[in-house]
Amino acid sequence: MAKSPSTPIHLIVMLLVTCFLCTVGKSNALTCPLPPELATKLHVDPVAVDSASTDYGNIVHSKPAAVLYPSSVEDIQSLVRSSYNCPIPFGISVRGNGHSVNGQDMARDGVVVDMKSLRENKHGIKIRVSKNHLFADVGGEQLWIDVLHTTAAQGLSPVSWTDFLYLSVGGTLSNAGISGQTFLHGPQISNVYELDVITGNGELLTCSKRNNSDLFDSVLGGLGQFGIITRARIALRSAPAKVRWSRAFYSNFSDFIIDQERIVRGGQRDVANYLEGSLVLDNGTPTEWITSFFPPTQLPQIMSLVKKYGIIYCLELTKYYFVDDTESEIDQDLQQVFKDFAHIPGFIDAKFVSHQEFLTRVPNVENESQTHPWQNLFIPKSRISDFNLGVLREIVLKRNITTGPVLFYPMNRHKWDAKSSAVIPDEDIFYTTSFLHASGIDNWQVYDDQNKAVIRFCEEAGIKIVKYLADYTTMEEWIEHFGSKWTTFRERKAQYDPKNILSPGQKIFNSI
Ligand code: FAD
Image 1 (cartoon, helix red, strand yellow):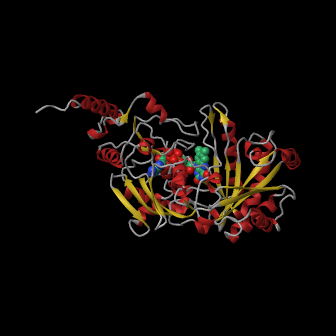
Image 2 (cartoon, protein in one colour):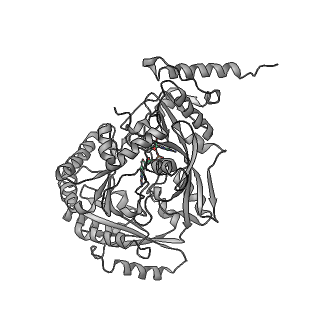
Image 3 (cartoon, helix red, strand yellow):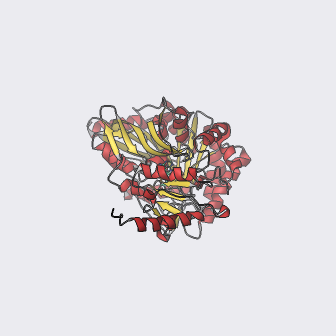
């Protein structure tokens, strides 16, 4: 019988892979043999390794031993099983789209699964829309931008989004997925019906609120610790015909938050379907964020307001229209919404855009010469004025180094499922703030210093902030972060990933 011509090459690659992985458990000189079908999909070359050693933050760089480019869910399952069955298992991280900012998607000396190859593979789940049942079955590797386009083609849409859509479904569901719709619909993790998950022992399980509910709850917001999401069933509703998108300025912080909270408390679609807020700081030229929205004639006035007050606050809201109302009717609506608000008179602008145009408002820009020392926090409402004085005025304004947008808006605790792994403050209303700094390769430390000063101030003032997309590096810090959720988190880790294989880049069960 003729031998398969591929056998010798196959064996060589296998040997290389096996030998490379010898170094994974070097101290024990153990090997982790891998199934032959992975041989050509596991790359150990510098290009592959380097690409998996960086992320959007461009600050943490951890080299994996190898990168898996899967062409199927089974490939990922085989890899996890190989590690599980190995005497010294190796760590496995999933790189959804590499938009972490602190190495959360890396696996030092382990294997990174690059989901891009699954996305680009013709076979597999992709995005399937059920118009009758109002859901989409979406591969965990898919980007939200593609979920938008596919569902919009059927006149449908998910209800909860992120501001930026070049993020993977598995990546945001491992965190929470927040934006201006969160106050009304909860984060993305509150809008999922079912998941397929590969657990840390290589089992592929379907879970939902009714079936394997412990796994379902753990995985949502679970920082990749319990399983690899390979499919998510996402809730859909009718997509609006158009969106009225408006922004108004405030010089006074109290007025700004009172008006934001009126919308959030009402939680009513007839006022707003989306609510965010942001800060405009007196640090030079207006950012693209302002220049792209307000007419050029208004910019000098806006900048003189910023000079006068140091910080001005911008409330941003949209309202969705499902039938093609005339724009004058919509204008009357707008006046109605803002009539009792305390914004600066005359500084309000609104435009009409399509739903897709609104959701794609943040462009996909990659700049490898930048670093992103970001900080995202949740702040309890009861201490928001202290946060304004101590952080925004005393630290952020005085240091005057902030670059990039600073977001600031409230959400409702009751829209978050208490059983998910996500951690939020223990108050009915809490705020999120995001300092989205962009810095050069060598000067990110000044922003990092500012981030640390913010945390220090909150600790000293007893403001119980919670970090979103947290970057802790010791188990003690994580225990404090999870608070009353820690015991369940640890028990479920022992149940679903007993050998601590998954998502080592989060540094929870493998502190540095
Ligand atoms: P990655 O960075 O690749 O992975 C993140 C974590 O999830 C890692 O631990 C990884 O191992 C794990 N993971 C990835 N895929 C899976 C999977 N299939 N199964 C299990 N675990 C998995 N967040 C918001 O909530 N709202 C926003 O508006 C928002 N905007 C952003 C804009 C930009 C420009 C950037 C850089 C980030 C933004 N984020 C936002 C944060 C973003 O949601 C997280 O960083 C998210 O993790 C990035 O998605 P990703 O697909 O690139 O995940």
